[in-house]
Image: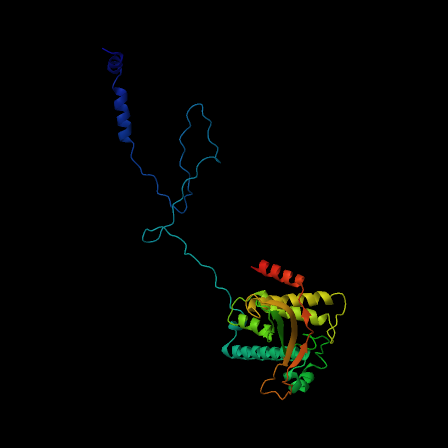
Length: 309
């Protein structure tokens, strides 16, 4: 027999029966039900820490999860989502329809007056033209004395003329005969090359015009040089016209240009039909003397033509 069986056999049964009788005699009473609203919520007891382990402090204990709020249908309750507050209406849009019409009318009047004022001041500072000649009194009454201007927008005398640069030459043909060509209108040739060309070259637009302006600015009315740049402007103009004559094959292919003469033909721009301004329609010619073409001029012309290619 084992020790456990021996211990069970030696133990009296009285103790066990006494315990059962005392349990039967004690009446069973239910604990009183407490009102949930009056009973404070208490955290459940925490399990004891194993021996040798320190008890956790209240701050490190995990909080007891609170029950989530629920709706009547049992779904969890969530607060309604609210979007950004609408921006307040400002400006003319905040006005009534009648006030909006009044404000729009006032703005239109101010805009018209501003445009009229800018136009009057522009005509006042602009050079003399057909409009200022016809309505000069009204312009002065608007500008003076409050808006008087002491400056001008453009040059005092803007160009109102067409200037054509023309050239003719005396050439010697391949057979040794000397001939004189007619007048080549170089300005008209440049104009024809520019018409219909979306990207005209700088040479077509400005080379001939600037060469002529350079010559006129360094020579007097008798075509005598004024200052140190007179000879330079003459050589530059002669080189430009020689290049144009070479492109046009003046005197025939292979002909040699010996002398050239340059002239300008100036005509006034006709006024519009509604203007009573009277201008002369007769052209004014300015002919330069014949220039002898030197070997240096021909060499410079060939080098310029070769570099252009």
